Image: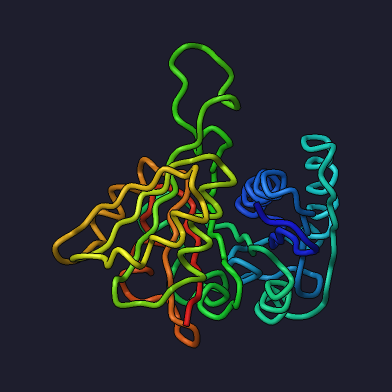
Length: 271
């Protein structure tokens, strides 16, 4: 479990999707026992193409930031919440915030298909350049969406977490990517499903299995393009974790998953 002075940081722009992302970020901060930082970047009045490329009425962002902080403090009374505004434009402000974050969380405009993250949006641009993991949360994401469906009438909050799914390239030396996926699964006491093309050397996951002995790991080998298998797995996952090489944006396959995945997507850079 993560400890220290890092935060879970979420961008707030006054839109409903950003508030849904803030709710997800609050749960993640609580799981990791970290402060939650709410960040509104840019100057008033808000204009088309704000933090997530969504039209937000003038003056709404400032009130939304305060409202989100209050609502989240009621929902998570033990959570340390920091609300901050900056006049710095969205992309540099979010990238700077990511440096100090365990993860940076951003919202999207829709759940599936063309309503996902459009290529060229600020959210995807930040995910392509941030040094820390960027989690992209779809609009309408609910707490129960990350847990096994309840069938016996018990509270959804007591249900086990759905698996964390990791898409892994066997040719990549991706300790940051693998470490984030294992750590996230361990924090949730969730299984980790690793999807990879061809054969993965046993040495790739062995040290992580030893470091996280209580995490159940299942490997799924795919002969060819793993994209369809990852997309299918995302429909039954709490989080999909994909990587990008440092200095490069997400590849075509990762961008497709970001648009169409059925769960939040974490983009993690690796050397």
